[in-house]
Length: 80
Image 1 (cartoon, rainbow, N blue to C red):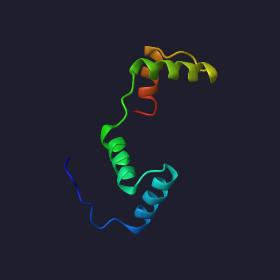
Image 2 (image 1 turned 135 degrees about the vertical axis):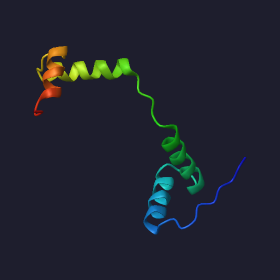
Image 3 (image 1 turned 90 degrees about the vertical axis):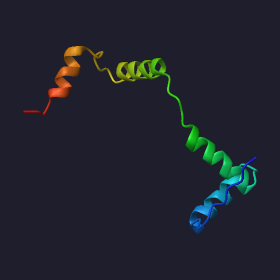
Image 4 (image 1 turned 180 degrees about the vertical axis):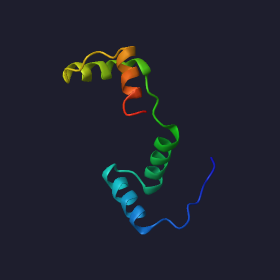
């Protein structure tokens, strides 16, 4: 397994990493790996789930459903 060395870690960042590691009962190395994995991996969004959440939010806020005319008006709003 490859090894990396991180140089010149700011003290504040190191202390936060150390604190997080203690909270999660991990070594500092393990905590750093978890942070790197989350950062590099990213989070995949499910487009259908996003649309469902947006629809629920619009209903909760009593906003009309999105339509082509509503989107065109929003795009041209404030443009000459």
